[in-house]
Image 1 (spheres, chains in turn yellow, brown):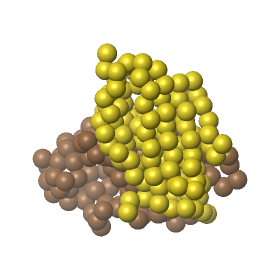
Image 2 (cartoon, helix red, strand yellow):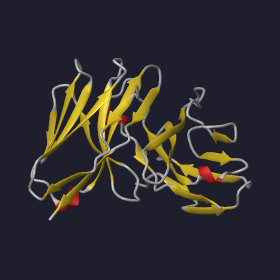
Image 3 (cartoon, rainbow over the protein chains, first blue to last red):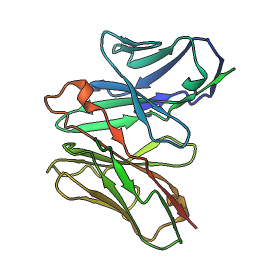
Length: 111
Length: 119
C-alpha cells in the first residue's frame, strides 16, 4: 500500500460547482498534513495546512480524519483559475522530517 | 526576500554524460529536499538534508545519483552516466527545521526546477 494515496482524476467540474478530494495515508504516526497546488509546468506551492479541528480559507476547506487516516479538500464555487493539480502531503516527524507527497489530483474547471 | 533558486533551468545532455544540478535554498532554511518529477507524474522523493544530520538518501534510485550540501546552504545533485529514463524535472525545496516548530513552519518552498533531457 502506498504511503499516501490520491485519485489522480481528472475531475472535470463546471464553474461554480463544489468539488471535494480525499487523500488517504498509511502511517498512523503522521503528524502534519498539507495541501499543495501545482499548476501545469510549475513548481508546487502550499495551498493550506490541515489542522486537526479542520480549517477554512475562503472557498477552501480542509479536514483531517485521524481515525480513518484521510484528509480532504473541499472547494466551493469553483473558478476557472482553480484548475490545477492538488497534492496531498503528509509529514512523519520523528527526529527529522519525513515528507511524502501524493501523486496529485487533477482538477479542470470548465466554463 | 529571495526564494529557492535552481540552475540551470534547462539542461540537455547526451546519454552517458554526467550532469550537476544546483539548488540555493532560502537563507535560514536548514532542511533541503530534492525531488524528481517525470512528465505527468507525481513528485518522487530523492534525498533530504537537515542541518548537520546524516542525509536521508532513501529515495535515490541508483548509485548513479548523489547529492552534497555545504553546511546549510547550496546543494548539488549529481547524476553520473545519465540514461534516458533520467529525463525529468528535478525540484529542490527548503524549509525551516521542524523540531519545536508549529506545523506552519514545515511549509516547503520549491524552486522552479531544472528540466533535464537526456538524448
